[in-house]
Amino acid sequence: MKTLNDFVTLSNGVKLPCLGYGTWQSPKAEAKEGVKEAIRLGYRHIDTALVYGNEDAVGEGIRASGIKRDELFVTTKHWITDRGYEKTIAAVEASLRNLGLDYVDLYLIHWPCVEKVTPEWKEINAATWRGFEKMYRDGKLRAIGLSNFEKKHIDALAETAEIAPMVNQIEFHPGYTQTDNVEYSKKCGMAVEAWSPLGSGAVLKDETLGAIAAKYGKSTAQLCIRFALQCDVIPMPKSVTPARIAQNMDVFDFEITDEDMKAIAAMPELGFSGYRPEEAPADALVG
Image (cartoon, rainbow, N blue to C red; front, top):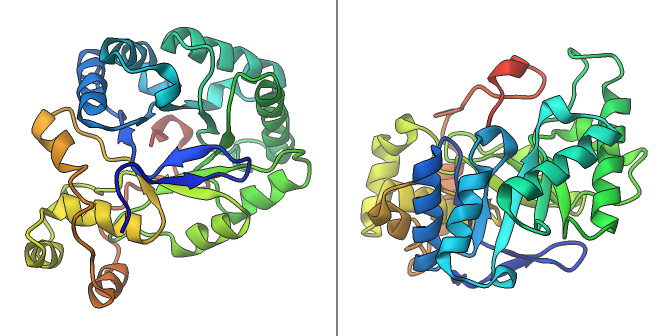
């Protein structure tokens, strides 16, 4: 059974902790205190993004924790306004300044450029990835990967990439598991991370999930996190409430049965954010 100290070894040998702390929708003050508290409780994997507007606060929380930098795994993400080779290099440097760090452990393309944006979407993604590769080779990024990429975008990027992506971070939770994308990403050598592993309020209030969780003496949120772990997907739950931050890591003392795993995986669509790269308006994309 996994423990909080377990990790996934990426294709380049970098070790990625199996549970992360997410900061999406965390205002600066809450992000700083949340990160500090999460690290105090034992989290070592912190996830943020330029578009969240809280990279500086996350960096402050990291420094306030008193934990050595090399004991932490920090992820941030590249935003759609910074696509292209030169802009990507500048974006990496900007995120490092915001965070107050010399390097980040994982840097992700937050969303792929798609055909509805421009017929040159493949070339734009390729140029962006070249920027990733340069900064990786320069030691600014210990690992590089994708977020919200589907098969079409992964295959297109592979046509020109010199370094294969190491991670794909996607929406994943009971009621929206993207099974095909998870399996294809893993087939391509990527670890899969889950943003929004708790889904939405609809997921947390679902009676079926609540009943399954009760069998294990756990909350629905804990069941969702455990479900991701048993699917070999790395969950990054977000909370700014100390009790819930602690509760979200208390998921290593039980195991969901095969029968219950199948029941959860077979649930109809529930709690989907509505964000898909080919469909959501660009100004609505977050995640």
